[in-house]
Length: 413
Image 1 (cartoon, rainbow, N blue to C red):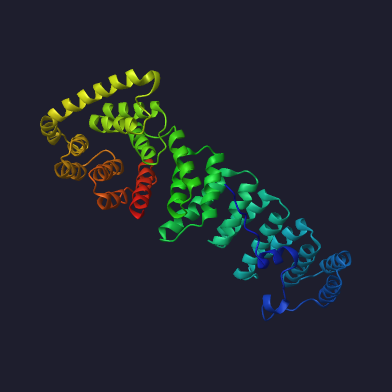
Image 2: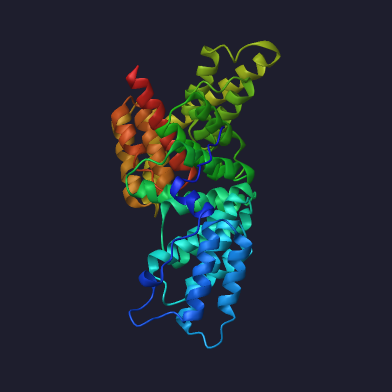
């Protein structure tokens, strides 16, 4: 994963290399006039600054500042010149002090305040003082308002000082706002977010981000990383373990006998023995099961699951009657799924939809199950449409997005 850091644009870098242009006429009020003694010293300071004689220029400013009886306007223009000299000579401490006074002044227009705040932050960024840069960019956003470019440099300032939590916070905000506006986040923005989440060991967040990468920038590396995130996500709800195995199987990522055995056992324990039996059958078809020392145990397990499937098929009518009396649709959802797995797709899918309408504990997970059942029934278009209704920032949403990717990829071949 390669992150590309954004270079400061010329307009921003210019603020780091040259003073802002202040003039008494443009900033002051019509009735303001400089004290003649102050004006004389500032004129000398301007000439010294033009000649790059920064020491003399600053001495001239000091002379102007020592004039007695100065007005507020005199002090304001003196501070302008002091800040300009400090900025051009590279004296960041004096520049920041002067700029802060100018920012605080009611004389300074809003646009100029924005320039000053931006200059303070970018100078710190250029000097690799990333904590000061981050503080400066945050101050800009607080006092001036949202600015996408400033937020991008804020993210980099946090990331380069290894403050991954704040970098992720700001980056996720930008990504979420982009998606909400129905626009496409850049690949680099998503990579930055994924990198922060990796550093923070935020497996669930990383999984969601790689889902976005695989969706908008489909590359094998992103798919592999996504599957890895699924497998290593220790916060994944147990109810979704079967779904992880199923998407891995569809992606060709189940390669060990233990994977097929675990998936089949989980399906059976969830009350979906026919699904478990189908998983074992695929393991045999792929030549992963039925080989080596574990072959006998695998046969016994298959026979056990087959018997459980026969028993479940025989009890479907009773299960349906019991589920119909329940207060929620959670039991009915699984009854419907079982009907689908035993070849009664129309009835099963109808029951699953009724279950969701009745109310379930987790509607996102229920819709994921419905989409998988539609997929099993060969209703690819309906499955994709259902998966697209799995909303939120959950693992169920991520798995649904993966199914959409796989189904669309398969249909385009």
